[in-house]
Structure formats: structure tokens, C-alpha cells
Amino acid sequence: MKSSEANYTSFWSFYALALAFACFGIYWMAFSLPAGYSPSMFMEVRDSIGLNHFSILVPLALTVSYPLALPSILFPLAPTLAAFLGSFAKGGMRQVRHLCSRLRPWRDGVEKTEGLRIYAMVLALNLGFLTLSYLVVVVAGSAEDQHVLEHNLRLHAPLLMILFFVMTNFLDTGGLLEELGWRGYALPLLLRKMNSPLTAAVFLGVFWALWHLPREVAPLLMGADVSEFLMSQLLFMAKSVGMTVVIVFFVNITGGSVLPAIMIHGVSNYIAETLRATPDSASLDVLWLIQMLVGVLLVVRYGANLGYRGQEHRQA
Image (tube, one colour):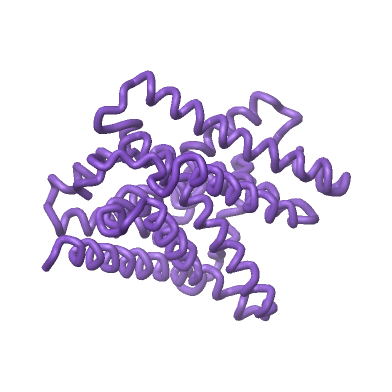
């Protein structure tokens, strides 16, 4: 089998596993928990320990009290679990160690000074996303929207607000558990196969968005408007593509590290979670548009190469 064909085969095998694990996690949480268990327990635990975001601490705290809820974590963990299995099948523990090396802050010739500068950019970007989202609510939202958002962000307790912002960069469940799979395993396969990093980013963004669809079955079964559902999914896909372009750029310039992906994914989830809690959650659409605009600006500035260094993705 040719190398390019092998890369596609590896990607689709990875994707099928990630989808299967995710579906099992959703099924377990929705249908297989015994009486007294409920998916809303995650939110209840989050509130009980005083968090304003879905940190990895939430499912860990839940499983201490409700061990049978543990398989539900397979939804966010699915891509990384699939990546570990794919890596082991390709090259045993040597390949698994190579996959884990993508958790280093920078790789393959990136100097410490350059690496620190890149992470300053990532933090500034995440803070910019958060600030712009807040300003949109202040300018266009109601007084109630602003009050709810300020409470959600803990603006009344600045030290707690800073702590939660730092935590969500590194401990968000989605960012922390997914990204070694999406940007640590799948992305290198696509970069070696496709004509440009931009093409790989768009392709991965589309299928990343589609991977979430099993999670949306419940709203449809409960009578959600189909046309509104389709429009929301198209917007979500566009947002996923835009955010993937941004993530791929920072992954590339750090030599293939997934840490920027964890940070950007985590803060995006954090902002979305806080905005959804406002009475008028339309400002969430503005956040997604901002992320897509940043992706477009990166393409204009750096071209389809998106900062790709080339050598760091020879192996996956």
C-alpha cells in the first residue's frame, strides 16, 4: 500500500474508532445508567464544587461518588483513546511514546525564547476572545445578559476569575481529552497526505464537527425544529473549521505540539459555556464569527502553509 493511501486508511480507522467510543459514551450516559443517575449530574457536580466551567475535575469528582458514571467520559476521551490504539497498532510503545511527545510545549528545533513568545500569543488570543465576547454582550445584550455573564465569569472576584481562566486553558474536559487525538494524531496523517496544511485543516474541521453529531440526537428526538437544527449545525461546522485553522497554525509553529490546541479549544468551550447561560445566547454566534475571522486573517497573512515547518510531521 502506498504511503498516502496508508495515511488515509489510518485516518479513517482512527475516525471510526473515535466515533464508536463517543457513541458508546453518549449511549451509556443517556440510557445505561441505573435509576438515580442522570446526565445532569455533571452540571450538579460542577455547581457543587463551585466551578463555572466543565473542568476535568468535574467528571473525576462525579466518578468518586458515582463510579458507574465513568464510561460516560468516553465521549471527550474517544479521539485520544483511538489515537493511542492506532499508534500502538502501527509501531507499538515506540509509536505511543512519539504520540505522547506532542504534549511537550514545543518540539523539533523550536527555541525556548520562540516557544515562550508563541504561548504569550496564544494566551493573548484567548484573552482577546473572552474580552470581545464580553464586550459584545455589554454593547448588544440586555442588562440581564450582562449581569448573568459577569456572574458566570466571576468578575466580582478577580482572583477567582483569573484562576478559572488559567484552569480552562489547560483543564477543560474537551480540550484536554480530545486534542491529542485530533491534532496530535489525525492532523499529521492529513498533513502528509494533502496538498496544503490549509486543506488538511478544513478537512479535519469538517469531520471534527460531524463527530459531534451523535451528541445532538437527543434534542432532535425531543422535538427540536429541524430547520433550526440544520442551521445551527452548519454554523457549528463553519466555526469548527475556523477554529481548526487557528489551532493548526499554532500547532505548526510549535513544531507539532498539541498544547496550543488544548488551550484554544478549552477557552473556546469556556466562553461558549458562559455565553449559553445568558438569557439571549445569540452573542455565542458572534464568538464563532470572531474565531472564523481570525482563521481568515491567518490564511491571508501566512498563506495556505499556516506556519507549517514540514519536518515535525514525518511521523505520527
